Length: 441
Image (tube, rainbow, N blue to C red; front, side, top):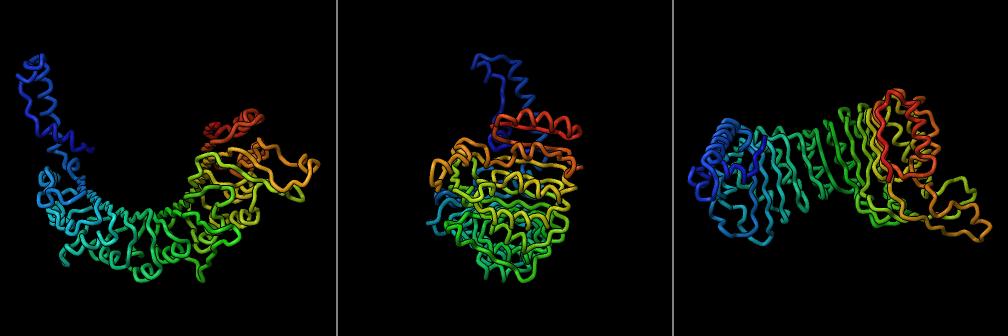
């Protein structure tokens, strides 16, 4: 249970007296009823210290920097011995001395009670400035997780966290770039982690994963680079990282203007080829391509190669993926440019799959390039054709029970086309033991 500060303020700051309602045309019974409610929740909150264990400190400028934020001391007292969830937001990069704020001093005296730390700052050195104020002998034995939002992170900061919280197991660091030298000098810290959420370069991800030998779950964000497709980045580790405990892997591609052209197949299969995941059970592949995008189809001979570009990259991608899907229970594909053939190829290796979730990327229009004459253009797909989607009639005509015998949950978000509903009903007749939810866009 968690009460926001304004509710706690109402409970503890206001004294309900009967004549308040008298002056405001209320009744004595209403006042008595409200008073009993406040007394009840006061009793509940005093006997539930977890309510007070979430503490946020927001520092925007040097105004009142000497004063402890109102209610902070009361929160610390009423939380009793419960581990604290701390959020610190430093919204200034110019004010020297923010780390000497009285509220931070107050929190640092209770660092032994910290269970989770969320830290936002504009200044790259903000966290180390805070940690430097912690006595060298002080520890945070209860701290298991941190979420850090900083412009960058160096090995000194990682090692300070390792010293402060020796049992830290979960680190979330979105929108952050690591340098290889910092990764290499933070092996002890990384070897403790069981959960990571990182945003960084592909080579650095691989170097980091090789040191996170205890990982249970990982969320990796890849920023789609501005390079051309003809110059893909590929890095292969000499020795694959053996992630023997990794059960959940999420790989997200961000910042694409054209997901059909830019999806980082090469980056992802570089990562997949560099790790061993014998117990991986949940895999999510996603992109942020939620808005409809234009797809350019180039003239191909023979035409049956299909409309999607980069067939070789997709084939290599599915081959790399194939070696990690044997034990999968859940596969979630969110707005990435795969085809029905890719999915069918993968389904043959997913005999244990129980949950399949697919959301197709949206196509605004199809533009044809390179057809030399109207005669050749007759063999091109029409501009409104639904040939760039994962779930097509080729897939719906398949009997998935042949490959996915353990499937229990099927969820599709697809584009409606003439035969879709007819084939959907055929699937429902075949997959009688499967929960099926199909949404059309």
